[in-house]
Length: 70
Image 1 (cartoon, rainbow, N blue to C red):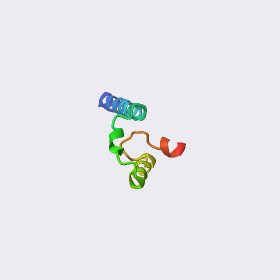
Image 2 (image 1 turned 90 degrees about the vertical axis):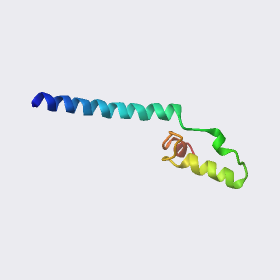
Image 3 (image 1 turned 60 degrees about the vertical axis):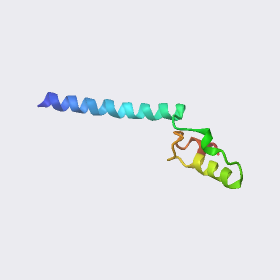
């Protein structure tokens, strides 16, 4: 029983490390970022671009990096 507990704990730790590594990779690769999503360049379109880039929860994968740079 103790061995099973150790195995599960080890798997949990490895999973946490894997998730952190995946977040870093996503931030560098920005897998879901698509520039064609921003075709309109009028005031509304540019405001949408800023809104998208400054929102850390959007799909650009950069989290707070655009917000910090702004």
